[in-house]
Image 1 (cartoon, rainbow, N blue to C red):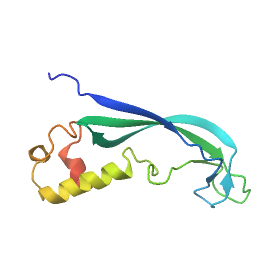
Image 2 (cartoon, one colour):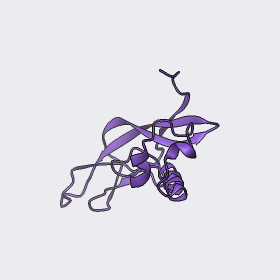
Image 3 (cartoon, one colour):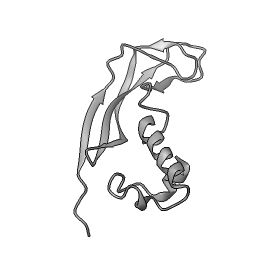
Length: 123
């Protein structure tokens, strides 16, 4: 077995006063609950970067909206159900296009040690 990979963890939270409901677009500041979300980000100085986001689930105040609660999304950082940042997804896509189907270990063995080749194909 190899030694564990070094990684950097960054703890973040949103400072926005409110967020728009993904169902109807109405802004809400009423917090239903908080939850932990972990996102992979682009490597820095040869180390994996993990963003630990304290995310909010908010209550929609629109009585006609089908969603009673919704998860806050942070522009340019999160998307629904995503486990990677937009920046990492773009970088993985660039690597996959550059390699043109070759094995990822040829270009980036240490940058993304836990990224399977099939992820590059679906990035």
